[in-house]
Length: 112
Image (cartoon, rainbow, N blue to C red; front, top):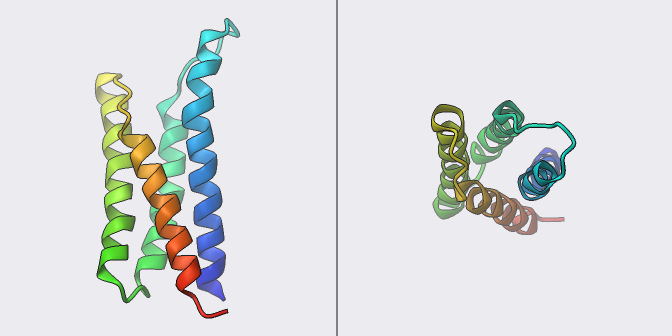
């Protein structure tokens, strides 16, 4: 049961991250006086990493474990480039989509 809850938290966090990554650049076009803060992305990354760490400890499928960690790696690389070089890479979208996919597959693999 705990694994199903972690999948639900992971899916929710990844979907919120994806919405943030898609909508926030559109809000920057509107002159509201807000600017991009990569630390918000870092908070999503920390939450995602903690959930993935807890989930992958009990996953028997190596390919699913690889999907989880490679998705986190793509997100981390994108955030790192954003924080250091102030370049927003689209890797974050692929990583977030990978996390959502991995959590859905993992959720469906559970015996209900």
